[in-house]
Image (cartoon, rainbow, N blue to C red; front, side, top):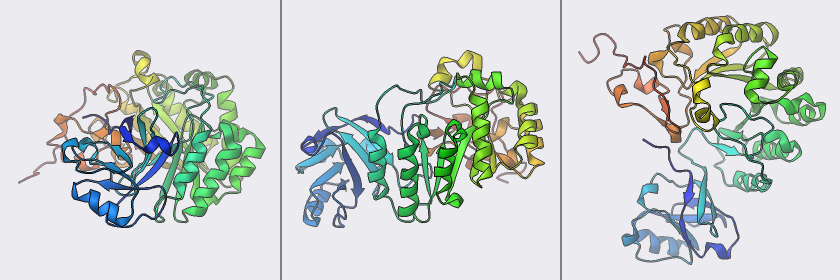
Length: 394
């Protein structure tokens, strides 16, 4: 199984006359458009006439080319492999390049807006290696998207790159999300270093703090190890200072630790250090590594079989479980985890890049298991084995 193609190439007609980038919200062809961004989602030949009667001027087709019996002046032709697209999904199309990006899927629980490809870290296991480009336009695009999201949206994620590189534009964007989506919480993945500056913390703290949180990595209590992993000097000092300043103002902070050969040897020490020095954290996530991007390039020095660090993980979990810090274990299949760790395991891998191996077919815990990433060349643990409860099926 491969990940859903959230970016790629598409044939378009007439869209280049609008702009170099076109934002579309897919809509039911039977209901009149509510916004200039709305495009009828065409699944059957009959949808063409229905959409035209409803007043649509643009459309997205997920039919076979041979089934296309009519056309719009402005149309994107995706084809039947994209029948997973649904009403309310947001697409960005660059007609001149024939490229598309899926920005939001209403059927997904794992939506996150990429704020920038730029970053001030070069983490050895980064799943989305940064680019030195001017992509400041993305914040404006996300701002347009927010007005198109369902009012009942519960969570809006933001990731990068490093979203706070342009904090003076990004924080107002999060504020806009909170204003437009009164039920939604915002969660931002960041390296946290921007919060070492008082003005950034002050601006962030002006948001509704009950509906805003940040996820920040700390890979080791030893600064040299953390700084080496993120490939940046003074990183740990600035990150910890940022966390302290955030919590001093009552903000919600999650710490993330990716598990690999450089973090596992001191994992117990790192978790004890967190429990002792940052007991006010709201959440700690211990995370299996996504073997793609830089992680794939550095596979030989990073990948570790979860079976080999199972007892270390169990000891680390025991330390954090004894605190008031909420704890989760992400991205690891249940069968490779010790029994004491399994209650903390979460189905955390985004649905568009998540699958199970054929060996998992008879497993009684498949419905509760995180499964595997399909976004890289994940190496399977030698401990992979279906969990079959005694007497199941009898």
